[in-house]
Image 1 (cartoon, rainbow, N blue to C red):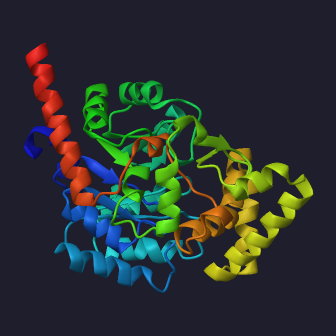
Image 2 (image 1 turned 180 degrees about the horizontal axis):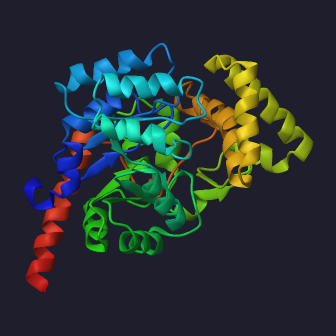
Length: 355
């Protein structure tokens, strides 16, 4: 069955099926990545939120758990240990890296020269074109239905727009969770799908049960709405007590909260004052989105940590795509990917018979 769904993306990434697990902060650790890869998909480690002293051990653990199957690493150039992650990706011959803003042509060139697939996530056509101009050889296109930081254009509009405009493989993200979605993405011209929320809501994610219970209790997709309250950028999240507090708080109170979280993030990452100032200056030189992204680097991870690591969903944020409302039970990554393959294959067969 899997061979019927194999695309050139599978050959590029070294996976069996064109299903990618995204690098969710504090969720995509070695256990989830290994479970995804062993099930036939392709997983990304969340290098942004894994402590610098543990990242190499996590890479080695994935290799051990999978028998050295290919996988990827996510990073941002504003991280204090960005150079460490780049060096480790090359040293351990990882198959791919994912990223957002940041890497220039020189950095991307170094990764490409090492045989690493450069696979940024973008939310607009112009960002996809810019990423390819800098050297990306695959782009993940996320529509507005996706969780976390997201854009305002739906996947069904954005995906064909990008597919028609670029000459590299496109991976579809935002609103995917089953075999029907995979088949639809392939019909649009994508070579695979990337999912975050679907893998977060699995038995292999390691997310605390109290937080997963909040996800499972969400049954109305319209409630999983976009908010600008956390960092000034649009984020799609499940509503909770913390967001309700921010809604009522004055701008001054929200600023105090942001500064407090920024200090905690700086201490946790070991960021020096000089590096913090450099990141802030770089953000100020860019557009408003770039500056907001800088703020996000300090605030959102601390709030995610409360929910995804400490198990206090009422006190942090819960990023989620709208598909969270459609997922009624927790399964293993093996069950999720096998179910996607089976459903996509059945639908393909039914379509062939109908047409």
